[in-house]
Structures are given as structure tokens and as C-alpha cells.
Length: 355
Image 1 (tube, one colour):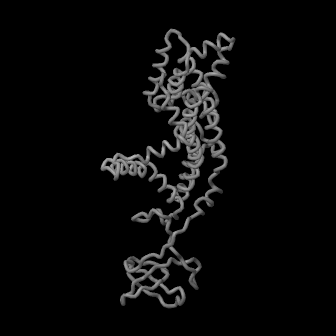
Image 2 (spheres, rainbow, N blue to C red):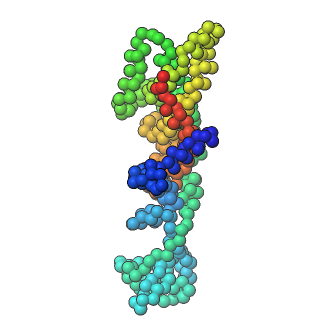
Image 3 (cartoon, rainbow, N blue to C red):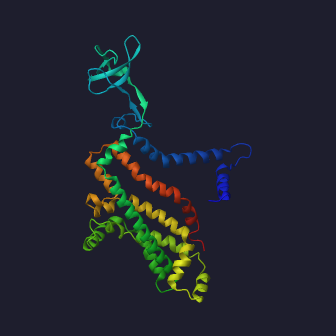
């Protein structure tokens, strides 16, 4: 990204309507942008912070944003560490005691230094002693039971292969529909766009029957092939390729270039912004796809991350602190890809349809 682009972006965000002070419309604009930022990134940040909480901290009410954990102390005569509380006694003094057990609304507390005497207090008289601590064991403990590397390899294979095939097939279709004149071309394009109105649930059974007849059940190719051609990709690339001058292709034909060379060496390089946008969309679609892999894959060794996470949650009876940690791990690759390629989205979409 050039320095001029960065400076122009900075001017957009710092430009105000009022000259000497902020105009009321400026305040409303900033408030609206702040609200949109919170709505978009708030749930993601909450999931990230919750992935560092213990199981007990997740079920607390009211919930805490930061991963606070209750402090505990090892007391003589007890095998396990006891939780610490600040207890308000009847005389108004506050002591830090460890809870041995709770019976109804009564808590039996002891002094960690001299645990011989048991102090009985009402549970309303105590406040837990908390400290900010990250539960890193949420990420370490499940790795023995959650085959993360296998699921990651399968997801990467499906995403990469499906994206490459999608770019190839959709770019060929977009090239034919934009640069060739033949009878029924517009009708074929309208038919492509009309398929967007067909719900995925309508075609699940027919596509599944085709996959099983091709012996692709429990095979990663059974996940890759069905969605290779997407109407969205054909529309995006076709509209972008319409902006490429026909005279450029005609001059290449006069010089003896074949149709394949026109497509591979002229059209594809000029359509790189649209291809980048489609690649980003395809990566997000395939990485987050859950329903179709769940139908086609039943063996754990071919599970993708999303299906593996689903089976992992059921296997552990939904221990949410582990599920949230594994969810964050599945979000990291797609987040990195989007962070590196998101600058192409604006360029590709903004120039699509210009002629």
C-alpha cells in the first residue's frame, strides 16, 4: 500500500464537518462507527477472553469479561488447595479465610495459618479473593484428545484445493461469458445467477447421492468437488473481465496468440484484483463450512476442524472452556489470511462492473 493511499485513508478518518470544533454530525458519525466496531468485534473479543477462563468462571453470574480466577491456598490437613475468601465477621472486621465446605447457606471457614478452629459464617458474608490469571491449560490439556494437527491438515487441504479449483473454473466461465459472443450467452449467465435463489438444503440429497455413487464418501474430494463452481464467483469475475478492452485481445489474436494464451497470459493477470477477492471469499467459505463436511465425512481421520470441533464438544460433554479454546485455534488461520489479503477486497469489488 502506497504512502499516498495511507495518507488519504488517514484524512478520511480525521476529516470533520466543523472547522474549529466538532459538529454534532461528527459526533454522531463517530458514535455510529464506535457502535459498529463493538457489534462486529465484541463477540470475537469475548470468545477470546472466555477461552482463558476456567469452567467455574464461565458459569458465573453476572459474567466477568476478564479471566479472573479465585485464589486458593494449601492448608495443613487437606489434600487439595482450599478457595480463599474475604470474610466480614460480626464485629465488622475482615479476615482472609479458606473455605473447607459449604452446608446450605452456611460456610465453614478456617484460618490458613492456624486451621484448628472452624469459623461458621453466612455465605453472604464472604467475597472470593480473585486475581487475573490466564488458564493456559485450556489450550494444552485437550491436545491429547483433540487431534488438532490432523484436522488442521484436512482443513488446509480442502481449503487450498477447493480455492484453486474454484479460481480456475470460475475464471474460465467468466472469460467465456464476457469475451465471447454466442447464442444463449445472456441466458446462461441469468441461469447461473438464478441458482443463488436455490437453498442449499434442496440439493443436499441429490449431491450426496452423486458423491456416494462416485465412491467419494469419507473422502476429502467429496467435500472439495461439489462447490468448485460458484455463481458468485462467476458473476464477480465476469463483471470484472468486462472492463478489459476487447481491442487488447483482438491485437493479441492478430499477433497469433491462441485463446488459451489470451486467457492465461492476458486476462488472468489483468483480473488479479477480482481473483484475490474471490480467493478470500473461497477461503472463508471453505474454512468455515460445517454442514456439507458433516454429511460427507464420518471417519475422524478425515474430519475438518469444524467437524472435529463438533465431535470434540460431544465427546467431552461440552466442557466449554476447552471448546472455546479450540474455537480460537480454528479462527487463527482464517484471521491471518484475511488480515494479509483484505486490502484487495475494496479494490476488487470497487472496480467490478465498471466498463
